[in-house]
Image (cartoon, rainbow, N blue to C red):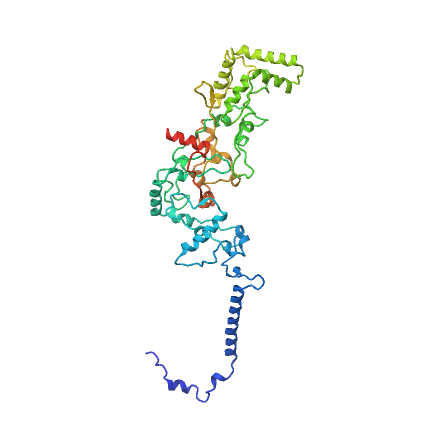
Length: 481
């Protein structure tokens, strides 16, 4: 049985003869009183300092901060009102009202951002994924948990797919940036709503390989013959990937390919077999055919300019003799200017025959193969040649990024080995998911978070094709056909 409690009489007997017990000073009671008083004074002082600063007559908001501000926002560290509305206080019952105020202030600097894709079921707040006050260094990246709250939830993805079916395609077109050409694949009917839990665990194969997409570029190019064929050495070096594909200033992507930088050393535009540096111009843009036609129609003038600038001839009689001699050589091979124009534009052989039997293989043979050897050449309604402008993408993934510098220790063939067998321009020789998982997985021990490759924010949608890139128009036309 439990011991019975003492009654009042028994308790009073404990203090018999010592009724002044609580009035006798004791060191423990004195210390307790001093500690309580000190805590009260410190609390009152902190409250006063927080509410008022005698020097600046303003609240010291930093004392109420929940942690240091990240490096990107460090200039706001002592001015909380830059992000927080002083009239609002966090309310767990109304978080949307409080976060909306913060979101509005985020968008003062982070302009032209929408939350995500247009088929997102419910827009989240900026602070749901981007967390401040976690340290003075870089802001902590978005975690996979943020992404998987939707992409790992079958119900959310089903609702997103359904919403996307009722939205116009233009809402999903991300505009190009920095005047770069982006490869724009067709959007799948259900959008990108496959449920998965990690990159190696369920992430869908890349769309380019999954849907066997092709490059709509009209340029004719054969990787295999350039890398494995009997191509003459350039500056004593055999052609390799690095000859044409050179990293940009940041090292993340490759520079754009151009005729002048990458092709002209081998593919000369020599039209006169006796003058190696007398070459047809290689203009760019929609008027390239007109520029070449103007050159051919003014061939005597072009020869005269060459005689003066390259040969140093100043005597008009000598210049005229030079022009007549070389024009006679042209006329011996073609009947008239129309035939020359046809050969220049429509020939697709390695050597232009200039309308007659192919000359014997001597060093004097013309090197120009004809525009159609590399380009698509059509005839206009006026039966004039039109060269289709080739469009080569600068970026192949609209919502993903890649850093070649981070992969500098790997050989090109490790990821792009298929180029050794690629004979068509339409081949998109990019690595597939399986090759990436080799390293970016638990087994490969290389980071494989969502933030490693993906951008999240969708910029303002391009709602008309007028401002779209040439490549996007080409792809749209091909899809309509």
